[in-house]
Image 1: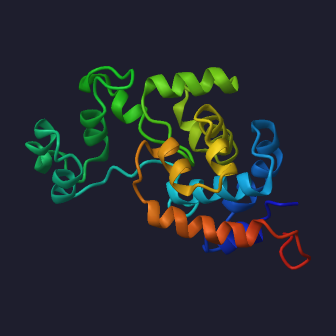
Image 2 (image 1 turned 180 degrees about the vertical axis):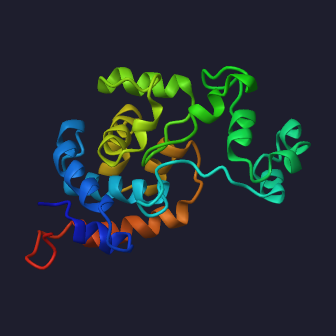
Length: 214
């Protein structure tokens, strides 16, 4: 086995829980189906999902922001900044506001911004993306978006996203920045992604050893 609970915990230290074993099992089964089938691709993939999910711990977007943080994150959107006190520490209201009339969502009153907030190891956001991923994976995400946060499904969603952006091309070149641009559209968090990729290559590129199988 390449993906084991012990190896994932070595990359993303965290207390004992039932999530890492579920992620490890899903990665082992699903990666070959999506072309993440070399040790280098696997190392890059797991490093990227580790960054995107805050160390394999966060599979639902946290929208509980202070007024100051709202003003910082959405500084390019005056209509949001002007309401930062109203939206502070109200995750549902903030989600409805910031994602309204975007990526296939309805207006603020529709509740779509909250309903289709980010979920997964590489987060799906917006009705259109939930629909597209569901069609590709044979799952009903529009009617039941919450399932995208289940570890096994979150792995499949992340692999679908990876394949849809041809991330393996950059991974084959050992190009962390290239992979990051395909996933993020820019270089947000590049230093952490580079750190995780170096660690993942050390952990996952060696052959499985008795002490790491779990």
